[in-house]
Image 1 (cartoon, helix red, strand yellow):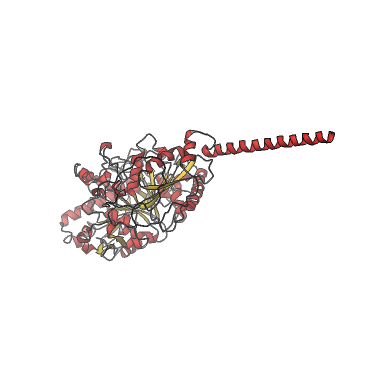
Image 2 (cartoon, helix red, strand yellow):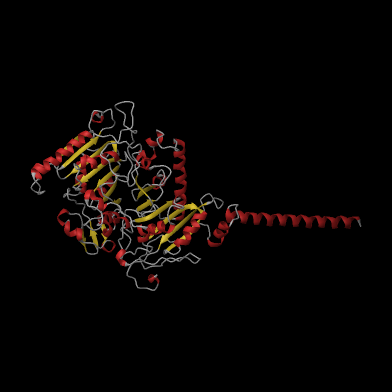
Length: 617
């Protein structure tokens, strides 16, 4: 009996143990599921994420190009969303802030009418900009430098107007770019060789360049193989699609003009600035345009002017201008250059080259007794919609006459990994050398994760890349390659102006307010990176305004990478569901418990003029 009693008690204890173990397992399973659904918060947003998305690497998103018609990828959205219709075909090349009709209502004085004039809210288009019928993906670089599909930019006017200057030729179903230009009939390569005989282009000293009035950007296109990255700009004028051609070729460019407003670049940004018959009246308005170039030119940087009025004695008849007019123009330019303390280092043929002094100690023209005005503004990088002034910015202080004001830069590519002088000097508040190095490592990790999601990221599939909220430029630095280039955008509402650091690293970028349209044509970027953009612009402007602008500038079958808090991305996902994008939410690389998520998207291929049932919407 005792033995039986002991056996019964043992079974009871065993049963109790099993019940306890099973109960604990169930409890921890439920707890784990709850934490995974909302990283420990268990709120309604977390529940939405669990129900609406599968946070995994997304094998079912196809990043390849097809051109086989719209809707080649499956729609992953599963909730009712607002559907955005296609705009009329007449908006194929719509540039909201450089609209031709609106431009003609503004004064022509100082090119004001060619500057940015954005539509009011009531004038904005809430539809999707169509691609032209027959649109195809551009040729891969470097073939794209020389050939552009006609269907993508169906305008032949430049082939007629610039025929003798060898800008562009129409051949069958493509445009061919021979590399010629108004001032370099023998080709951009030979022209750059002439510059390189004076300017240290070959050794990496010159990395960033500014091309004013760039045409189709052949100068910038041929500088790329010499490891020089040029920011090219031209107005949207009577010559159709200059900047559009440049971007189709895979060359950095924006719509812009040197008019009455400061250029959207930081001070001391460019190693070289260039004007090849760019038609800018450099001597006019008390030299205000040369002073603006001086602002963005790095101490020790070079300014190149080729064409009128240089060597006017030999060319005045060909230019159809009087000797007196050209002589006076060159005298004014020489006088202003002297006031700016630019040293003329070369004049040969129709090319003149000046060099900005490295500091104020080597610049007697900047002394108090000199008549030139010194700018009173304390922040020379505060430029967004600010009027240009007839004044010069002071050089940063130095301790000796040999020291480069603002800090000496290493040649590229070493300067990409070196500590930027603006960080080393502490001139960017809240960023120390240590925090900068942490940012570099963080983005190397992020980019490594991106490459697992999209294995085509560094294969040449994406040539023109935009980072909408670039910070210190570490995303661009992490993917830097001759196969691609990155337009680093620093929002004007960002807490800190970091664009100068980006240029210190040998990268390029621009200031912009994402409540307005970007200064480019539709379909000019292959991939867009949006890190924290919608958190930054929360309550600043409508989310759909920003998303529709992203759609406008993104190529068909281009990709987008959003990185933001999950509650923000849920809202983005809902709007994008009506924009002919295929989307997938992906966990942070550190796991599902991190509130920050990644939303990846591919824009569907579709074109204007398609009468299929789906495209009517």
